[in-house]
Image 1 (tube, helix red, strand yellow):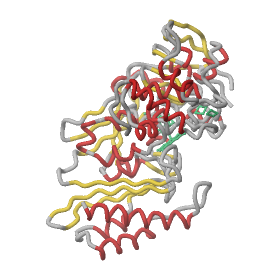
Image 2: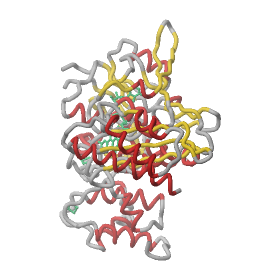
Image 3: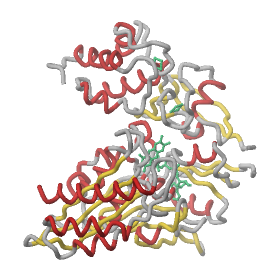
Image 4: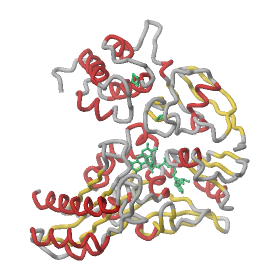
Length: 163
Length: 288
Ligand SMILES: Cc1cc2nc3c(=O)[nH]c(=O)nc-3n(C[C@H](O)[C@H](O)[C@H](O)COP(=O)(O)OP(=O)(O)OC[C@H]3O[C@@H](n4cnc5c(N)ncnc54)[C@H](O)[C@@H]3O)c2cc1C
Ligand code: FES
Ligand code: FES
């Protein structure tokens, strides 16, 4: 498929970027192949697994379904943007501490979604974490340690008791 | 296969409609249907690709007046979080609960859901029981023209609607339900999340002096389009919601539901499940 190229400008992990993309290119391909940000993973390519989850204007979406041109004028955060100068983001650190990572392929998407959930509901329950992570599939961990990691952050955020 | 020659992301509706006036534009909002359909090749792009997401007048929920209006680009997440809709039309909010995943809901629009015209689209049954209409707009003789058609008449077949190629769906509208309106939605799939409905059913009615009035029943994934189940409705209208009425309604489902075998379920299973759902939904209303 031939397609016209369009210039887009947007904020990516806090920095302004500007590039030309084909109209049909997906945000995932742009991030990985054009911008070299390979933290965001390509797995199913159909919105089923969440490995490609990114945050756009404060909401998580599947970058494999999002048109790259639709990033124009928006604020995009990928897993590479979570780390602060002080070190890993608390959600990243919790995944490390709780062994919530095996092969790691689902991890960037899982962390992006978990971070989004915790930002909107800092003291969420295990049940709320489960519902919120429904769009993220993991073939290795069995989810228990992922949920433990998310709960540990909720506890640090001042959650009273386990939900 | 055609080359995309123009990409547009207008901010005003009239600009968008001028661009679609020749019928040679592919439009999208969230892209959650368009992207997989074009990737797999079941759908081809037209010469222009047009994003609707920046058109402010196509977004937002107006729930103050007698008529409720949900803009075409309103996301499923926005409907799910709307406290106004939770109060006025909980049946619609209920249908967002098991819609895909949060990531999809954040991108997916109600207009896209209706225009994709899947027999299993989850916004259709609740909107059908709310008696919704869709607003369609086009650019003709130098002006924006709009028309309205009942949602029921909008669906013509899988992926087929009464929308003309030059038209855009601008909003879905319905009358504010009366205060004693009760509504229910039930959908099934093997998992609670990321499931296209195997079957779905929505129910809406008033209960006045113990009798059902203004009954609307809608079903998904049991026919080429989402549909109003007229025989089930007739079995309920004006009746008390007792065991005999429920049995008659369950028996009537076979008149309305004409499911097919496909990858998700057999026709036999769907016919069975829709009966179970009608029974469950009615029993649930009866208990509460
Ligand atoms: C993994 C996955 C899970 C899903 N789960 C569900 C589910 O549980 N329930 C469900 O109902 N759906 C589900 N879907 C389907 C899809 O997410 C929905 O149909 C969604 O609402 C489509 O909205 P969109 O904005 O992304 O549409 P788009 O893909 O942008 O558009 C869909 C179609 O409508 C047209 N269109 C869009 N807006 C307009 C408009 N305003 N005027 C005219 N034409 C328009 C487009 O040209 C296209 O043909 C799922 C999809 C995926 C990928
Ligand atoms: S790669 Fe995007 S959801 Fe699986
Ligand atoms: S750790 Fe391997 S898929 Fe989740």
